[in-house]
Image (cartoon, rainbow, N blue to C red; front, side):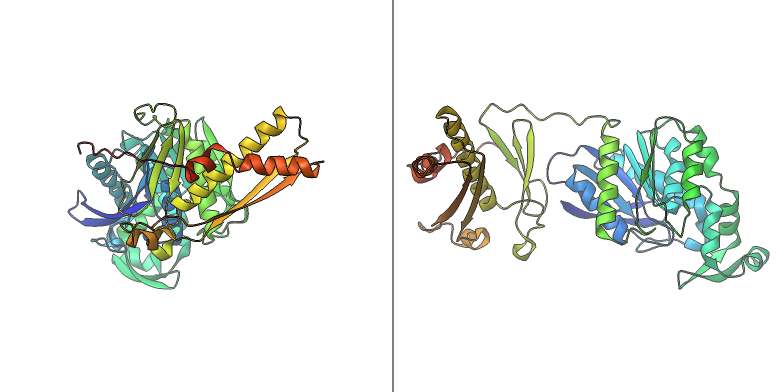
Length: 403
């Protein structure tokens, strides 16, 4: 995936900071992510969810709301209506850059914000919330301070999760006046409500109220034992995968790439890293390098794919011959390895010996096989098509096409 800083100016004149996370291959859809109350776009949940969405082909903008993280503005004054306006401004920024967002995702209070903003973002097709409250005033319970004094005096300092924040009377009033359930009842978009039954910050009853208010099609997703902040990586990635799978049936399909002839493969790199998207007929793969050599470890390495091609061809050839010759072959397991490193080889690619020197292929054949049948299958393995391609006189013809 690629991560690019992206800033935009809101209707109030503040510059908000964001990060666009894009997949290596074709973009299936564009999403907009809203972080949790007083969090930032750098929260573990925001980073992990948007990274996982990119792996699944969804480009996402995550950004810092007004006055939080690296964004300008006064967090104390804008309140919940300001968060909704920020989302609308962010959607317009996306529409003018990589594409209008079809999928809105909000975590905690960000979930309430996307529910309130969805009807005002024309490109919205689906909305997903994670641990969202059904009423915005719920966040006031997490604030340690004299809210009555703030409302009387106009402003004061409070503590939220151990951090000090200035807060305005307008912020408190907007939280009490916001009606999330009314907004949900008016929505005509598919909604997914993800919530952990044991969430101790925003109780499961909030999910029930949101679900009851929503129109069909609506879906509830249990996040099991996940904590409210999705601090465990597995929980965040699970939520992202389930949201992407659910949203897929409602999203407008991306334009199809040009059809490939049988036996033709397309490989493209449209990101800043090393990862590439591979199209083989209607199958999509990702290849990458490990992080210690400059990649993101988003997929197998080129040498991994080379070994996989040899192993796959060997297993298929053995299976076909065994069937044709009535050899009782039950299972085939092939383990392959080599002694080269792609990153080091690239430094010496102009040298004649810069190639794989040895591949070790270990075959485990299961079945009621005689010694003669085992020897027969081993001989077949040595003549599988990919094996013969690698060890034969292979010529690669290069042609430079117009850019």
